Length: 431
Image (cartoon, rainbow, N blue to C red; front, side):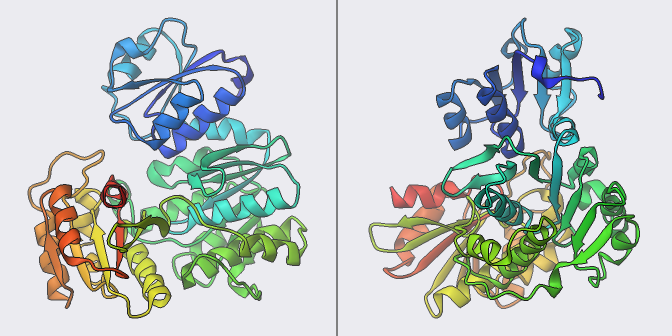
């Protein structure tokens, strides 16, 4: 790994090029003048944008997608070992790296600020990136969403700093060489991989232990899930909860105030003026699929979209929505993400929708998992009803759109939620 020089790569192929992380590296390589191709299971806004920038996009996976002169294959960590493109690249001895391994190579040559945590890492990464951009530090930024304004998940800064979202899935973040780590929080997610909270916390502790003695760990060390993590690092621990600042954020919610405090703490470490950092944060418009206003339907119903797919995220977003919209009627369309997560956290999901007036559930978005008949959205609807919520299940997006069309009136609010393709419902209704 140490001797790989990405500058020498002429042609790269990406498996899962529509993925939010992988696509950022594809953008980077297009910007460097390399030839880029890639495949994904379906077309999306991301694949369309990459196509416009010159990438050759294949829909569906096939060995034929990997051309003879490819000298690097990059894959998402979720790709299966039997993927035909991955198999062909190994047969042809093409240099094959995962997205986290590429991040590791990039971070070696930069002063890296890695933002991790179960919730809020995307927003916090984008916030820190904006502060550094506004301070004219010309950072490279890699975010797990599209930043509002640029509508990109990648900023090709030429300065010394890399601001990167560091994902805990399959311990991906352990590839990164950070100087500053921000941990927003640790919650019970990705337990299909980790098995239990102790293993998850240990992974975060292993990440924090990568910091050098002159590095910084930004977190809330009084959070019970972070106490052991904070003890494991040689670096200085800086408590973001102690930040006193008069924010006037454009994005609602208590959770976003915490994200802003974490971002401001990183800015302080870099000696960025407090007033300038607060100004940047107050001008921050959020990111794609994070409580994002999509538009209005013909009837005048407001449509928002949010990526929240964990009970804590759903609760925080709907609480912020209730504070923001007051007594307006809120319809929440939720598409559960993964059978394993829905099953493991069923009771928590059942209690997460208290601030929505009506909940409409789509089928579970399986993503990388095979069908599990012991859990489904009807069972989740029953759990929500048990906790006093008004929930219904609909077996297709078309039926959900028809339900909303018949029930949502002018001035009401629709929020589509989930990490799958549920956003299409709101987009169709606006059309």
